[in-house]
Length: 67
Image 1 (cartoon, helix red, strand yellow):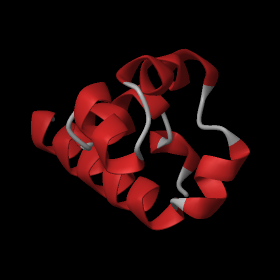
Image 2 (cartoon, one colour):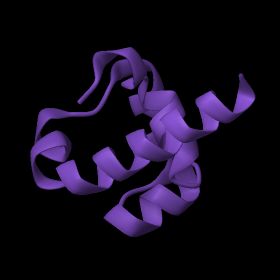
Image 3 (tube, helix red, strand yellow):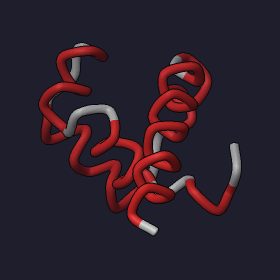
């Protein structure tokens, strides 16, 4: 992942927010919300790398459109 855009908050928001991502992963929105400050747990990074990369691409696109 490009470290310039790996802010978990941006990635979570790009994937639809804590509630939507929580439903996708079968977790509570509170668990997802905590990742905004703490970062993604290693097992989530490994098991859902494709989803996180998709979120990263969406976040990058959104940031570039704001320029």
